[in-house]
Length: 262
Image (cartoon, rainbow, N blue to C red; front, side, top):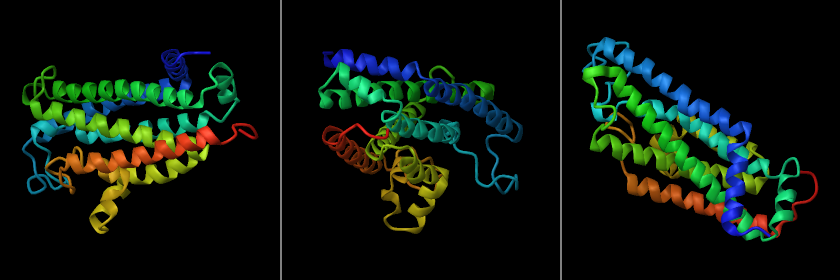
């Protein structure tokens, strides 16, 4: 029987050796920074001080220098949410879970080893992707941007908030995928929120900001965003969603039979 650290190691290997991991890795570490380069070039052409009054093609003013690039980070939110939901649902496909339980019969250890492995992978992927994106953004701006290696205190603070948002939403999506045994439910619930529905509901409905994506946006709302920057409130709300998701999925995982059509 495997020990808890060895079970976590096995789950890590399973994640990073999957095709899904490398597809998501490519999207957020390669494609997302390319979007940052394109956006930086467009900013450099019109000037960082451009406003809708001076440039009618702009919907809103360009964010202050410390916040540049975080609008691109929203691109990676969709792949990372999809990754969590699909990973949670995949445990009930192709008899993978049955094989895992033959090696480690302690379901509590199996469940939390999966959570810890995902936490490690999502933390690594989130920080790598966001740091590379913001650094390349400012590198592409040249002398007008921040130092791409040191950035600024505000930029590093928002990198941390953005990564926390990615990590918690990945865990939430994973927990929902595990509980419902498919990726459809977490994706139907979370993906529309990623496509600005969360912010829209937060502005139009009093309880809208308690939805997970809208709460996550409170973590790194910039001065040009419609939502206020309230990291403590957003973090607590999102953490409650994650805890409820993981608690319910862990109870179901421990008590339900894994046999049948999966």
